[in-house]
Amino acid sequence: MAFLRPITRSVVALGACALASGCTSGLIYTHTVRPLTTNFNKTPVGERSEIGDVKDLRVYNIEVQWDSNAVGDVARKHGFEELYYADLETLSILGVWTQQWLHLYGK
Image: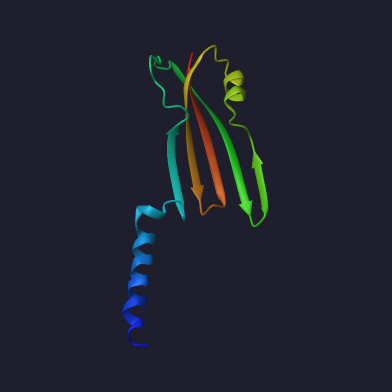
């Protein structure tokens, strides 16, 4: 059984490296911003930006979500005439709390 000790140490070391590195992002805290579209061919620069906000709380099998970050809802609420592009910003803590902000750019 002495031959298992180096293997066990290796597995533990590999697991520790995985948890400490970026390959397991999102286990404790994640904060990202990503575009909702990547086709920016001839896309004008937005003159203004507005934000929609939605919050999500999960505990066991219970999920509570409130507010809206739907593109159409936010655009209508802020009186956009044209929408050029949008970004989605996401904050997640332990997979229990998630908050998303929708950034709209247009006129």
